[in-house]
Length: 113
Image (tube, rainbow, N blue to C red; front, side, top):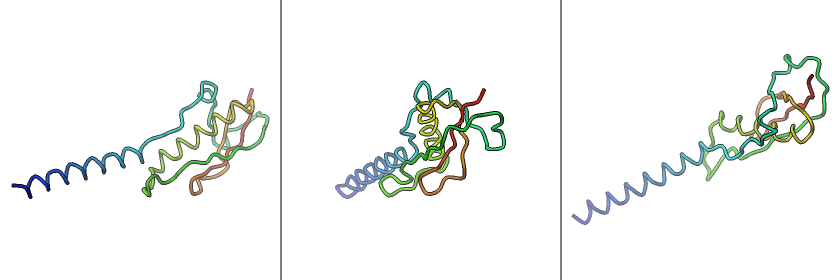
């Protein structure tokens, strides 16, 4: 009876720990600022008639507790970071300069009419 109870407790602890880790790896920690939420995201070929203000490189964690995060969550977080920074630079549009590399991505910041 003690062995069955011990195994049940271990199973509950394992499942709780596993679910906690999976929740951490799925989280997007960065929230858009009010101004950042208004920043458009365009592909480079879509940027027309805009003034280039500069670049920003967004960085985040690609692993939490040794577990690799979802590529889509990481990309969303990097984009949100870039949007927030573009707002502080006076921009209203960002465009990725390339793909996510490791845990970072560079964006060009524009002011479009």
